[in-house]
Amino acid sequence: MKILSDLMSALIEHIRAAGWTQKEAAKVLGVTQPRISDLMRGKIDLFSVDAVVVMLLRVGYQIDWTIREAA
Figure 1 (spheres, rainbow, N blue to C red):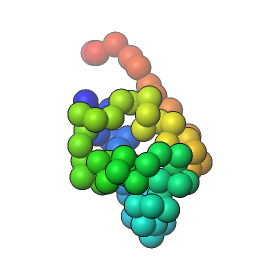
Figure 2: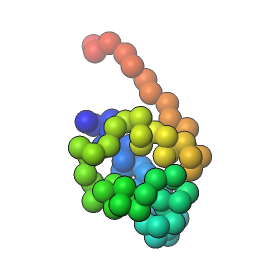
Figure 3: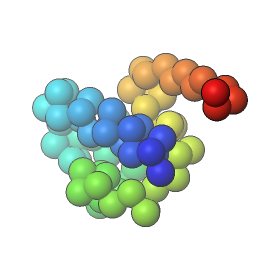
Figure 4: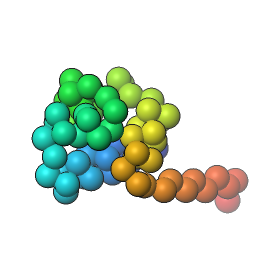
């Protein structure tokens, strides 16, 4: 859930910084306006990591993960 939350936060920040309406964001991200509404309201249970990663990639983000054993 932490990964999904971080990804959603980055996408929400990008939408706000761009000054997009929900309709504009939906068009750019290839989803519906109600989907953007769910995102902006933080409805994390309605999203998968894959779905949010795809939207971030559509606006030019590069996502790097580091996986390592705990110390």
